[in-house]
Image 1: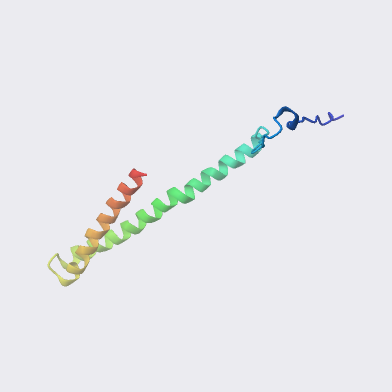
Image 2 (image 1 turned 90 degrees about the vertical axis):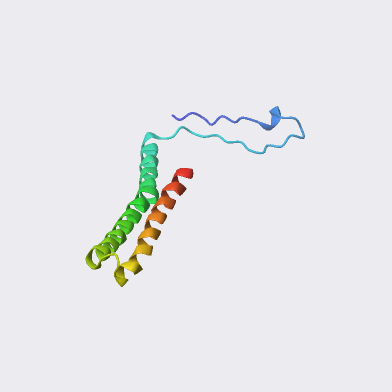
Length: 105
């Protein structure tokens, strides 16, 4: 048989004018619930942090390779390269800014 529920009168222990602002009773976490919670936290971290870095890295890599391809194909003095060189500078500036921004958090 199950144990009867024990009642505990907290109000009788407090002064008459006292206010109870918060009373929190937590049961121990079930091992299966903990495993599920940790699994969800891991995948949340992967999607929020790792995926953002991977996508941005691929994006920067593709743009950078295209810019270097244009410079290598047409030469540095060509009109195409003059359009691409500021993009390369901006690209590397953005990478440095992202790394410094993440490091400062």
